[in-house]
Structures are given as structure tokens and as C-alpha cells.
Image (cartoon, rainbow, N blue to C red; front, side, top):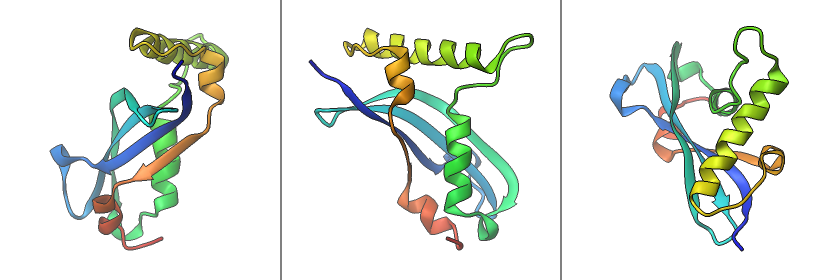
Length: 127
């Protein structure tokens, strides 16, 4: 039986809004399986800012990436706990549709790595 060993968010330059001076990135969340395969869970995330690459750090990008891929903020009148439960349930269902059984609580407790693309690292001039 295939299991999810960790989550991974891959962050790269956003080619649709590529400006060598302004920060604009895309973020893709995947589940990494014990056999080495990756299943994409979210590929529609990213952000831009008026910040400059010269002052942007890898740590800032990593922290923002974790926020951007979720869980999302609660809907009006909802709680963070409800929003998180719905988020993990949705991702677990997406994995189940692809033949990987994992519960939302297990999925939410897995390690989550952020990987920065080489070309994104090349754009940054700070550490």
C-alpha cells in the first residue's frame, strides 16, 4: 500500500508575471509518496509583491509559500479549526481519487518541505 511520507511545496518564478525587479512566484503543493512519486494537490497558488528581489530572502519566500498553499483563512463566521479541517479533508479526498488512502488528520500532521527552484534562487541576491 502506497503511503504519503511528506508534503512538498515547489516555488518558482511566475512566468506569467516575470519581472526581473519585482517578486512574483508560483507555488505547487504535492504529496510525496513512499515510492518517490509526487501527486500534485494544488497548482494554482502563488503571489506577487512590490518587494524587490535584491531584498527578498529565501526564508521570507519559504514562510510565505507555507501560508499561500494553505490551509486558507476561515470564511466569515467560521473558525480556523473548521477551515483547516475542510482543507485537509479536501486534500485527502483528492489523494483518495488518485488511489492513495490517507486521513485528513494524518495528512495535516506530515512534515512539509519548501523547495525553491534554482532559477528563483538565482534571482535572489540575499540569503
